[in-house]
Image (tube, rainbow, N blue to C red):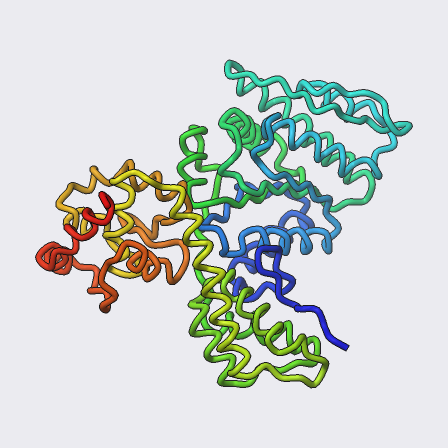
Length: 420
């Protein structure tokens, strides 16, 4: 028989490797919630570029919460009705099998401007028609607080150890909804510390700025930057799923795959999936060889080239392309903004607008204070080839190298290719 691939590029990973530090922190929060019956004080937000496994991490957290007997609510931000209505709708959905009495929950649902009507006997059902209000975020927060208290109480009454809410793609949440959530959490912190509730979120790098602009009490949020995987974690992410199906990776094959992946989880899944296919979807006892991985690397590079091309197609302005070209000169990064500015003969402030556009396009991300990097390993080499820049070894990211780049005419070549 042939075995389906245990790797899942573009989907939630079946095996989560290399996130022990994050999961240890999460386990501590979940134990605080379920064992002590207490509200977890801060909302955790894991953020990073696409392809780093943020959703996979949150799904693993959800599994661990369920294993501890908690009720979980999952929301993907960005729906037209707004964040508050999305939370309310998912609360109702999760409680459909739990609620036996309708009064308290029905009142809470009505208070967040949702049309509640009787559906299944004894269960409040929802027509999501949340009415947006710019002028009363604190009132909306009280409504959301009442809903969370009602849902948590109902869940506890049915034997649940607490309630854990998840918001994915939080960078797409409406500002009104974020304000309501922030104020509601502030109220819960001071008025309902013995209510076992926790909130986890995940989003792109711009999530931090988006939340901070929307709320005035951003200290309620604990921001955690998700980075690349270490080589050992990549080896586990590739070798572990195959081993569970009775298939082994040759040592050299695994080394080549780890080197090519460069810690990027999406590339890890691509290489694993293509190598599995190149090996003929092996039976138990089969092996993945260096020959299979060599073909998988070619397949992966073609796949990533299409991804690079799609993201570059999102930008057309001269300033954005110049900035992308300048960053590519120095490799995938990180590199200081001041060095990029010197390369282009500009000030660091001049880069602010094109930087934001490139971040929104998923091409670059902030990497520590005043530094930028490409979101995907290998992006720099693709950009250099795309714009006809030199393929020579990138110089170290220093101010001296920035001056050398200008002296070698790289800046002129970047601008010439933009205009061409």
